[in-house]
Length: 422
Image (tube, rainbow, N blue to C red; front, side, top):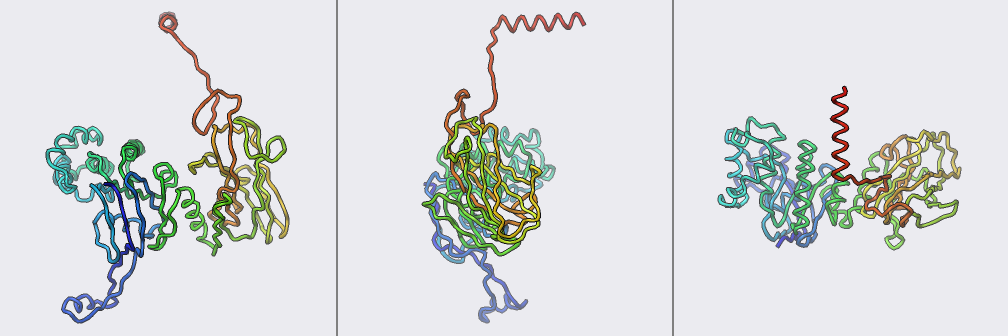
């Protein structure tokens, strides 16, 4: 239960070059259409309880893939198989009747999803509590704001934990509070064994929720792997929007990640230095420098160097660059070797493994003009320092103190006395 299998899955839509082509086919006068493929030859296996993110640019075929898996549309080619009950959050609120009340729409939506009226009735209180729309539950849906429709639709779709949960950017609308609340429910379902297919343009959400990621590009499956590696490659594709880039996939055995760029300037090496010497580990809170060595391959009017520290799950911890620090370099000569030291007086990171990504570009971001982007250029370890034991990626200054009932009573009397004196 909860598995998903796809073999050679594809979807093409008929395109008629001539207006009369469709009518001609209806009366049996041959084939007059061409197939416009939006998804082609996609194969993958998702085990029960696995969380998989689907990423790609607009038009890559992500939503079409989810519609195929959920049975909303039929495939043109290939086969797919799902095990167990599927709950799909594709277009929240679609199918609600505007003249019916929220409560009536809940019963209708539950019936469409194959949930019995008795189960909906027993879950109605929880649905109302989660949606938090108050008395509007008994008002016509046409009186709802879009956010209220999202709240109610998500609440009924997730009222009963499914075997497979499919989410297509459904939570990109609505207020921030409800987004957090919804993500908490999704996480709980995942922890309880629900298989998750999650489409999102948010790298942080994919890295946090998912065990794997699939990268689609123009309907073709390009990558299937760990979220950070897939998103690194996706980042390289995005950076190619201005120039034709060469994407160099590093040897996995070397531990080096994806590189992309025009190579007008290139990174020679990245190292961490502790006490002026290269190091691969550091104590939490110790002073360190990240040294980036580079060389210009062509004359450059301007150059920015950036570093980004990520944790072992690929989540961004801290990043900056010479542009933001007011240290951008101009008028770089071809063949000129350079290096930049990013000095941290105290690297207050928690115990664990981290990576450094670095980039050479212009202005404040590599998206505009990317010379060299190197993901996971250097991996280092943070070990326990002098600070008290803590968890997480940040080591913050903190103190604690006890107070007993007698002290609280004395403080209360002091406050009351101050009020009387005033």
